[in-house]
Length: 377
Image 1 (tube, rainbow, N blue to C red):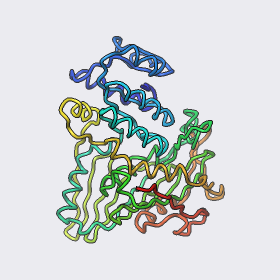
Image 2: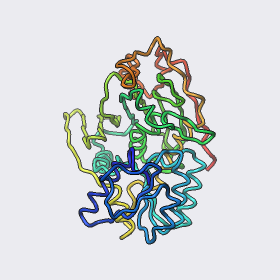
Image 3: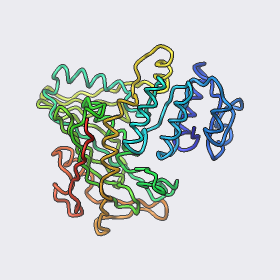
Image 4: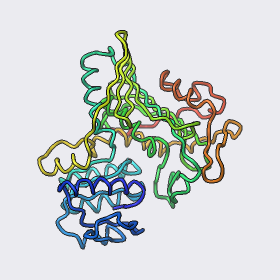
């Protein structure tokens, strides 16, 4: 379901699996027809999942790669069949929908994989091993740093882009919940924070330089149930895009995971090493789960910690607009993008000190961190 946007990536991956004899793509659904040659001629094309499901029997797998606000109803419809479900990130747009989806998944007995592709990377196993071995000493904190560039066209590509809600329906399309959501999810996984019970507190400080509803420059400060601090400092208002990374701060060294490049560097008193790793495909993992009970790499329940972060952002006050005096625009027309001068250094300091922008005393940071009240366990 959903053959445009990130759905095009899913179609390419399914074509690879089909060529290997692993799957057969039997049907797709999207209100906008697929582009020519995007799906095999044998695949039926429908306008929506409500049309596809009654007409398509014996499905093994349903993939939902649609706008955030549609995830909950489409996922619930898919779980009413005998198929397992691959649901793109973020899972849903509220903690209440997450709880409903978890209940439906438990009742159906079906597997639900969430599309946090970074969780399939083998470097995570290496990180677990280095922590167990004490290579960087005692883990004292984790930071996630992301600085990307997104132009005006990015926010014009769809009616839900940059929205907190549409007609009362939650969307929560902010920097930490969509473009750089993998940074948050990867930091949580490294910290061992998977479920709702693994998070003790979440604080948010949200800003926007663009003329949007949601945040584009933010600090999310998390403390796990074991007391470990995680600080995610993220923006799409950088001067240039740099691959995001997660830093492990140890008492005897640091490890930096560049998760989009599968690259892990370790620095201790003994020197610096760097190694690249491979990754597992989440769709293949879900097929193996269905066939042989292999554990899911990115299960629905294991996205509970991330959903607490999303809920904290959803319920926070509106992002504070950054004073135009502290914003520089580069480019023309729809290719123009906002730049917050000095934001790169601010992100580094926030992660290193586990501080918010206002605590760092940045001239444009007028907001104060907002603590999210966690649901009772």
